[in-house]
Image (tube, rainbow, N blue to C red; front, side, top):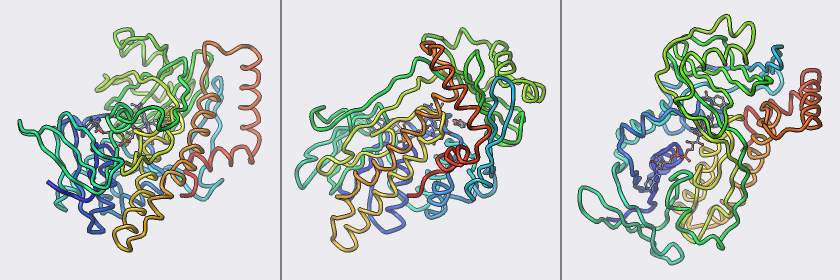
Length: 389
Ligand code: RFL
Ligand code: PHB
């Protein structure tokens, strides 16, 4: 088998890249280790920057997003029970779209199948070869047989635990990492949201977030201990904790329905530089991770593949390699700004077990400043809606 661009991973990064290339007539093939139902069933992100929504429009995967995406012009912050609003549109002229990653992935798979993009699910044992030479190839098992896919370039879009970055020897790059002393416990419930915008709460018992997937489906998170297990958190305990941490108005409006999904995720910041190694380009979570507080992970995956698609399109249309050579530098400039923002917003909203009284006073002062300063709110809002590409 042969293709121009072998894409490893059918998450948002790999699927979106495949469509950005396919609409330009550039052959590519996506190799995904899991089956389609698993890929479409994963509950993850929920907030899209306008630039991400625009990319979905560009590849014709936006009809359900236009019909069902919820446009949000602001969100609320609760500090020890008191709520104030960050008016995103008023402060920046832009908003965000609340639409589940699950739906984004479904829409991209559907667009790919309609367009005839080769999407291979259940591709096991993917291995990359000769990324430093001029004729790289990928081997994998599919339908009980060993397969070889020859290509010009490989896009490593296989997430944080994938093989693309793991196969590089560590001395080829630099890894930067922060691990946070807590996790997020998330719950999805068939219940109307408790508020028409998202609520981020800093409470003495820890962070909480009220989010949503639609007008009938809610998504909530609470900060939990790293060694907490799902069995420790009955639905009842979780709803009670949310009510305490989100406070007054939200607690009263919250509909306590049984969890249809519940999971614990650790919080991590991670960047691997550079994002190019020979003919391998890393994109999305394969190259970097942010804590979910700033809602940046999926949006960074989208901006990475936009830069990468631009480089590949220029290469195939005009034979120019400059766009590909600039890929890592351009992507990392945006990645690091989102890393900074996600780290900062996490620190502002969480109560870490190792926080000393001095750090806590600084946090309280910063929240107080944010409440009263339009300049501080604008800085937060600009980053939240997404910095320019
Ligand atoms: P993904 O989504 O992990 O997809 C990688 C794909 O590669 C496959 N794969 C392999 N395929 C072949 N061979 C192998 N050896 C393979 N190894 C792995 C995997 O099966 C998978 O299909 O990475 P991608 O595409 O880079 O997308 C990144 C996003 O998924 C991620 O950044 C976001 O979900 C992060 N995130 C959020 N991002 C936002 O922008 N806004 C949010 O509101 C937001 N909320 C969140 C989040 C992540 C969360 N968790 C679970 C960590 C909320 C949470 C709780
Ligand atoms: C979500 O709805 O999953 C979500 C929303 C906002 C965040 C993180 C996650 O900051």
